[in-house]
Amino acid sequence: MKDEYFQYYILSYFDLEKVTTESQIVHVIHAKRTPSMFYLIELNGWHHGFSLPNKISREQLSKIIKVLLGDSYLIEKEKGYVLTEKGQLACTEYFKQHYYPQKIKGFSKAKIRSPFWNRFQLFTQVFSEYSYQNTKYVPIVKHPHHQENIRQLFQQFSSNKEQLLMQWYTEQQFLFDQLDDQVADVLTNQLTGHDFIGRTRSQLAAYYQMSPEEFSFYFRDAVEEVLQLIQQYTDQLPLNKEIVQILHLETHLGLSASTFKTYELIKQGANLSEIARQRAIKENTVREHILEMAFTFEHFPYQKFIPSDIYQSLNHCFDEVENFNYQKAVNEINQLEFMHYRLVELERMRLK
Image (cartoon, rainbow, N blue to C red; front, side):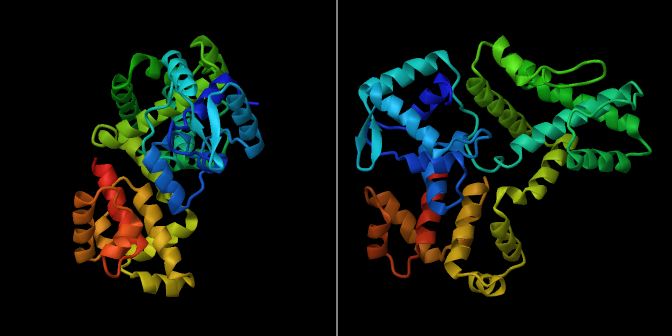
């Protein structure tokens, strides 16, 4: 069973009016990659729960919800649950005293967050040991893929490793100067270097008086903030930028493997029907892939996939008609596809 923190974290998924089901929460945590789940997460701001490192089973979630029902924090409604006023107050008060995830607001970095930290730790150790001319040490990260990535980088700069070392130090100083002191401490205290072994997350959780679950969310937010800074300060952080770019490529730019294949064909200029034919998949599957790209990428050319007259009509109706849902859209606009409606809706959500 998860600790008290996780119970309140699960409680935060519920609303006083909107019904939330067990399946929805499980699918968020297990990163179910369907257009409907992407939309639900975007609509509710549940990105912090997408693909949690510590998965939770439906049985575990059911036990947590049973506890929340017993405390009268939730009530059953329409095959799901809604929050009670008592539950809302309890959740609010709890997170006044505990950390609640707030940095993760999209899908684009979900696949690289964990491998980035592994690679960052290993880079830090390698550069530290190199500065002392020490070649006899045990790598903190054993995975051969991460080690090979660093070996290749050093090969590129084999004639000028000292310059590479100075560039790394300069970047890390700049990067950590942008962080809040506690966030910087949490990250640097986990790093290993010459004659220094970083602390474990359990040790740091105890030091900061957090439960393991609370610290896990705090740490994920810290890594997300680092990734955001690298994205923001690309000119000042070229080595870090290269690490991130390689990881994005290794993880299909955050897409599923199948969607990435569709993305590659779109880049080559293939249209929807051509992609379906070449890949021997349904056109509707291609549409789902396009929606996955739209939700995953922070910047997406929405209008490219919508006829201009339909795009204009949809935006006009969204402006003029209250609660403009898909059924109303179908009745108003000829040749409308669900993909068109969802893309315009997503674009407008993000512009807000």
